[in-house]
Length: 104
Image (cartoon, rainbow, N blue to C red; front, side, top):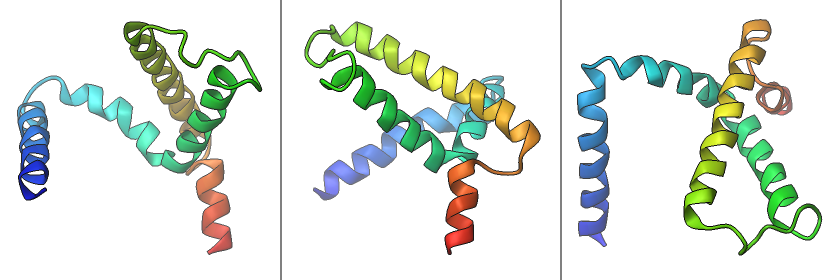
């Protein structure tokens, strides 16, 4: 188990170290918008997943190839990044984050 954790940390460092010094860092600025609305995006992904994969929506569970699932994930996350960027231009934080802040 300790080896698995160390291996995961190694992969993370392997991925993020070169990004820190390259032009790819601009890509992570876009992802940061989704990170600032993490709770909202998590709940939105859950709702989209329920709609796409269960009997309540399209019922696609078990019908898509892994390559199509990966494409679907990239599209959904891209839309979330785009929506988060637009939302954060107007408001300081996401709707669920502000509700969470008010409740706490």
